[in-house]
Each structure stands twice: as C-alpha cells, then as structure tokens.
Image: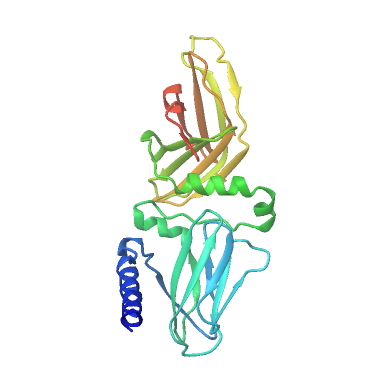
Length: 281
C-alpha cells in the first residue's frame, strides 16, 4: 500500500523538477514585429531588399501573394473586414526574417520599400531595384553576396571631393575569385547628378613629366547602384571585379563621369587598402 502511495508522489516530484529546469527565452531574443495595417479594398505592397523565399500568415483572413514576374515583392490584403490582429513572417534569400503584426484598417494600403529600414541605423535610404526571377535563378549566389556587401558596416573612411561631390570608399570585400568595392557618392548641390560612365584601371603611381602613363583597364563583372543622385542626397555603388593586387609603384583608380557635364570625380586605392579587405563569409 505504501508503495502505491510513494510511486505517484515520486512521479509528481519528477514532473516538478522537469518544469523547474525549463528555461524561458530571454526577451533579448524576441524579434520586435513591425505594425502593418491592411485594407479590404486596397492592396498593400511590400518591396524587400532580397528575393522572397517563403511567407507565413497567422490567419486565413489575410491574403498574401507574390507579384507575378517579380521575386522580391509581396502583396497583402484583407480577405474580410474587421479581422482579429494576426501575424506575418517573411523569409528572404539574404537570410533575414521580417516579422509583422497585421491589423485591419478600412482605408489602409500603400507601397513600402523595406530597404529604407536601413535609414534607422544611420545609413541613408536608397531605393532598391526589383529583383526578377531570371536574375534570381541565373545567379542566386551573386545576388546573395551583393545583399551581404550592401548590408555590411562600412570600415573605410577614404574620401575624395570635387565640384560639390563627395566620394567615399565604404568597404572592400572578397570571395574566392572576386573583389567587391562599395562606394557612396554625395551630391551637395541642388542639381541632380547623372552618371554617364565609370572607369577602373591600374596606372603608374608617379607619372614622369611628359611620359605617357601606362594604364591597365579593369572591367567590372557587375556594377550595382543608382545612375542618378538627386540634389542634396546620396547613393551607393558596388563594383565587382576579378581579384587582383596592385604592382609596386602603381595605384588603382576609379573615375566617375557626369552625363553631359563636367562634374567628374576620382579616387585612388593602394595595396594598403586592399590588404584590409574582409572576407564575405
């Protein structure tokens, strides 16, 4: 009889010990959701900085669909009016998760460029181009690497100035085969700045008077970024070139030329900068 009483007590004590050993997730691990109000008669469009891999909605009262022919655009709409608040999680190819708390708003709608979330961290906002499936399928690894470069923290402060323009080298990254140069250009004037073309080459570090400088042109595999910088604004440029180092006595030069204008700007990079390049992975 005593054994019949003791065994249940031991079982209850064991359960108590198991419960006591369970840990709650720290509040610091919680991902704070963005508040998003959606309507019944209007569609809310979300543009993400990377291709969308998956999306999960909390209730069927929310309609979630990708835009046909585009890889980084999600459309959200209410399936019925006055639904209870719900959740939405979006997973993107650059390894990020976006969490939203969805509520109903009778007149809600609009278009949101989520790349501008970077502005809250001190980086200037910039418009992200649409990412099409052929780009995603044709070079998914390259797209992922570009996203990683653009999301990284700057670690250079090398700057050039000319004609109320300021060009700054933000970072240099590398992988097995290529170098990724990330620049930001500021337009301090009110007149928009249109980029016509850019040149990248290795030339003599010291040019002898009346001697022709020897130049080795470098053609980027990829050039990403805006071709226009509005007045009193800025934009980022990323150039992807095959890996190289600079021979002794030479320098690497970037030149940016204005379309139908003379506001050109250039910057040189030395081996000491290349040696500080950081791996992407």
